Image (cartoon, rainbow, N blue to C red; front, side, top):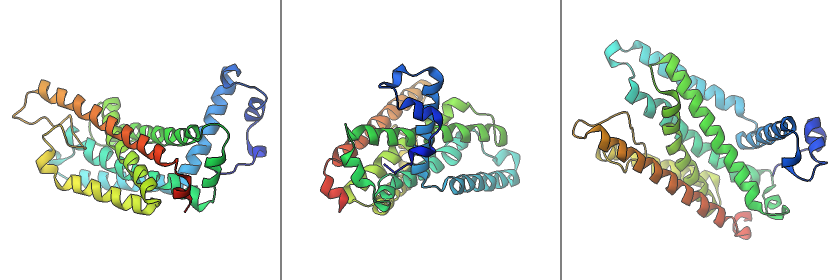
Length: 263
């Protein structure tokens, strides 16, 4: 992982180093340690460009708000439009870009070798990094949903945030898998973007089926009853999460080939 000077860590982290087990720490110390680990992992993932990411997201929502505001009332974004345009698409794009950085940043900083020499299981290190990445995406999904609720239309915040996160999880896992296979974050991002673009090209063919990655549970086709559509929704979400999990597992297994990644 990226080298961190222990002298810069909070006093709670220093005190934690004197304990043999995390579970033995007081609740406040555990929360402090957890937050510091999350902050450092997020800093690595964003490669010290967090403010630029947030400014880009803010610009996207401002443009979307202005365009929506200039539309007639009947043509403005409704519930079924919010999920794809304000959550699924931007989150998937962000997941691809951030997942590119997981390995690329380590190679650029010449710290990838440390991953293979860390005491204990290196899977714990990668899982911590990937867990932080997906937690960030889930938090951003909640933030996007809150912004959409106050700036665009009435929506179920928790539900729409979860639905927006699922395709992003798959997109991120797919990008990481390609990054391991091609040994390049840039190549992985290009291939992942190509796959997502190909999926979107078949939107009209797939959007009313259970097999569409960007399945919209709030856009019920007239030819289907809501119960069937709800069943398809569960099948789609569970399937996408399982496929994302399999790609993540394959990526972690691919990281065992040390020489392949360090070339």
